Image (cartoon, rainbow, N blue to C red):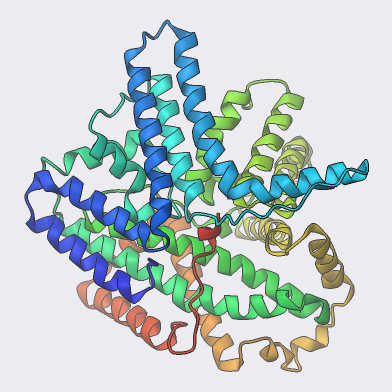
Length: 496
């Protein structure tokens, strides 16, 4: 079931209404039932996978809680068992063909041929997200950061809570479990939380249906036959893909945060105006925060983090980003994309002393608007260029795309209206730019005030609040990409 489907528009109000009218002790079972129904809307059989992951991590956490803290061997064995079982499921369903093809390619070099696989494996929606959330809980219990949850229904709801189940944010046990436990014994209705939640959902629908899905029309057309276009079209397509993937993923997070807020539950913010970052390091503290912080806490720091020699620190960075790239998809072009992010971080750290000396010598005022704008544009350029590897089908395609982008740049095509034959006519392009302008205003507000769309609206007088809501609703209804004959674009991160 997708957030942008008619089914969800019926499903969500029913869930909320019954949640608030039923006895408190039934709220957890009701949300658990609703969450499994929500997930089974894609493929009912794959509910067994999330149930398996839930049972394994639940039992392992209970065992960890009972084993004495000084019995490190037993505790480590239980932790490893939980990691191996869950990661084995993830690897089989997500990386089987990738591993098979990679091994086959390596063996073919020495003249050994592997028989082609005939398994029919479909990637379960959201498996990377709920697997990491469940594993994070097990690691937290192992470290002693949280106590094992003894109520199976509470824990099962933590793993499968429907707003953030299939595309995050990847919640931490210390933040979400306690809230889920309270809904069965405390009043959870809060008018302010509910209205803020609805505002965040509205903003999410706007980003998805007006901006992301409209940008996808041009992006898909250009990337489908990229070898036929010149540099202007290729540059426009990759810039709009940066906008598309941000609005697509941030919209899901906004709807998830909003839906949970209506139910009185707070989820962590997943995006913090990343395109206002002035360095790649800052960018990754603002983009997909739940995943970035997960890799930081459960991979980067255990490897040694930054509290070690510089070569080791750079190695830890590269490993973390390479794994992050592989997490995004079972293909080498995702691994290369992750490696590029690691290289950016390493080069940025190496050049930092030189940059500081340069600024001091030439008396560069680093806090001025012009300097910050230049840093921001450079960061956006570097990230967007790397996205060619993310969006292309292969590494070879990505390299050829970049080559054409820089060697066939015909500036006159900006003025001959040829850009209006890339899938979006002049009217549709105008709507897209208007949507992006609204997005920049909202993100600029966050960059300045560290507050999201709901706060921006709530700070206005009542009349202005109504106008903002009405304008967004009209734009979603009139300019949203949907309707007869249109195959609604699913959220990009469903495939991860």
